[in-house]
Amino acid sequence: MEVRAEILIAILASGLVTLLPRVLPLMVLSRFELPKAVADWLKHVPVAVMAALVAQSLFIAGGKPVTGPTPEMAAALAAFLVAVRTRSLLGTVVAGVACTMALRHLF
Image (tube, rainbow, N blue to C red; front, side, top):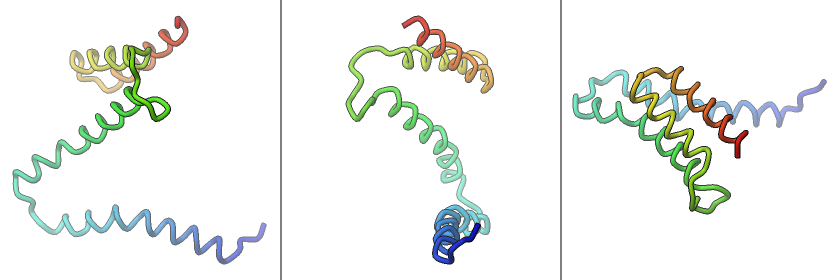
């Protein structure tokens, strides 16, 4: 199998473009001590991103707003309750997947 030069260059350039925005901020910020307020604020970014992704998948289907309850919403509520009660990532995932499977099978 022959690899053409332009394909190889495109793959390497894509890898570089993907890597740079992730590595450069890490390298620059690792040399500085962030103020406590900034560090505290940054702790909430992963949770906010996850909430935005989950909300988008729950409340928008096919580019249109979801108007009524869905099995996914019920499963998300069950997973949320398990997460609040147990603080277990594995328990939350298992509860969400099991609830989704059961509700899709029933409806």
